[in-house]
Image 1 (tube, rainbow, N blue to C red):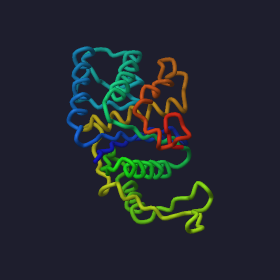
Image 2: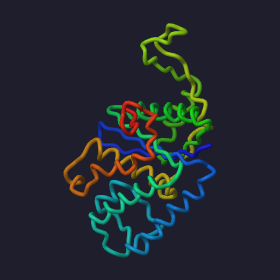
Image 3: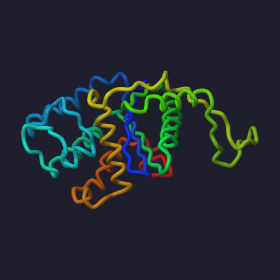
Image 4: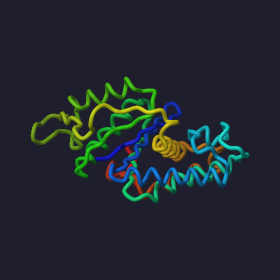
Length: 237
């Protein structure tokens, strides 16, 4: 069983999702590593342990996060440290989607890849998402658990001759659960991953000067590359 923490980052018309998959038997170990890292930031930079890390605000220098002045340069260093920490944690894996135009399509593709991968891993997933899209995400998961037409990569399914086959998602347990991101280190980390993906795919000068255009590659070791074998990092497109 995996707990899968999902958050998104977007700049119209671009939508990114990152989903952090944590094996349930390693949840406490993983949580402690993130918590310990936050404690080190309290010592080194005065950053409040309970302060929410919201990626675009964090790297832009917004918000009162510390008793000290934390410069944009230092914040971007910390942003990279977060990604490096995730990449160092054994058995944590990361799904990623980058798509234009439709957020619901991006989420649907993410669900299909999570479901297929859980089948391959012999596991199941419980989804935990940031608050804000409860009705939309729940409706989509329920629909896909009953009706989920998948097109054949060869044009038609050979056994039926049809262009699509109904393959309901059966490895995602229950409706998604929703948490306030301020209450979940894992959702905040997923947000960092999604923002790193956005800056990789859509770099902007003001952020690239701090290296954020290349930050996503810190996550390459934990990316679920089988989610899209045609992409070096398995990014679903």
